[in-house]
Length: 504
Image 1 (cartoon, rainbow, N blue to C red):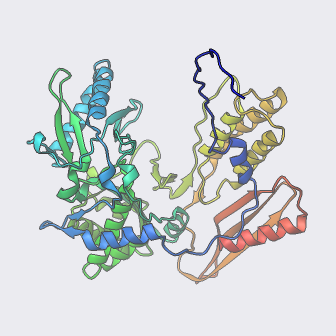
Image 2 (image 1 turned 180 degrees about the vertical axis):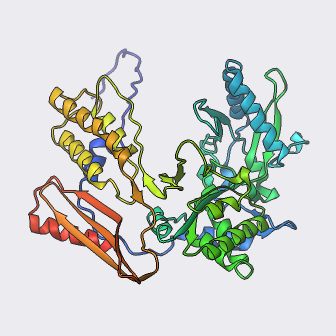
Image 3 (image 1 turned 135 degrees about the vertical axis):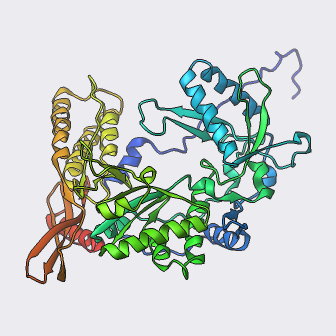
């Protein structure tokens, strides 16, 4: 058959489909309540991690001053697109904000001038002869005027996409970053004479190989109406994906290279360093002073400087220059310092807690989760408090309360009363030092138990002195919420025993 005649012109129809590749918050939270299994044993390095390690070993070097020069581990870097246009646009947006805030503008100008004065960046004199592989880092400032020290933090955004759709971070390998706060803080508690310090501008003490510095270009102008100027950042830059690996690996390399000259400092740097913080000590004052001296000298050999020293020992504290001290021994208020996120009062030698909660007229499930996330407690000192908070959140999930809907009045009152009790956490003081003086014997004592709602484990250190006096101190605890699916008490008790075995 043949059909003929006029037909309407075809109208194109567009269809748009959406596939969610991100699990809902409820699905993610469901995993949070699952029973945790035994910790995985140390696994083999991945292919990428092995490559990063080999790349570091074969490319790092030291200059005539001892400072390290490293290369960023990259992949498919030739696929980077053009990024200068976006960087200029972001700079114009930045200046619109700076022009409205004189205090922030002055701090931003000071930051950039310091970067230049310290030779951490260099001016690009011949812009036209740019390397074919250039990446321009947009930057912006996080201004917090309430801070007493660093009021402005400048952020270099290596995740800003180029015209090819990929960013610098998409072409950088992250490497292995393995540091355990739990282990570091537990070791910190065995020292009678303890101290903390950090490496000043750690990332910026490590140079990037000149061949890669065009990947770290920025655009800046000191005056709003001036022409933009191009600079190259010369050092490891915060915000790049490989920066943590390069910084930690360089600190380890320094410890290895200088181990024969500074054996005490080498061991401590490899074991008791967390990013730019060193948390350590010794059992006697003489060793502690020697360790302090070796750390100064070893870090100086690598072009790094230690500052912000804190100690429970006035003798150790006095051995530091006054401008390098984090606190004062003679002050009207009890000094406290943050030690890997935990508040430590050095002169009292105790750990304390302070929970800052913003009171709101209404409360949602999202607010509850936000409060729980602020209860930072890696050693489990306030485990019962956090466990109770998690149990409340589990109840909200079981009742299918919306994330952004107000809590029903009975639950809201219950939560408000619970949060109101947080002020009593500040009265809690945990001794940092675990041992008795002149010990002749130490015993680990562990307990594990379970209920239908939760299970947990706790470990104490029992130390017996030569005079037979006994000191019992809390080391750490862990707790878990029982899964939503009902499990028998005996099985939960077995889970608690497993948790205890992991803890010890």
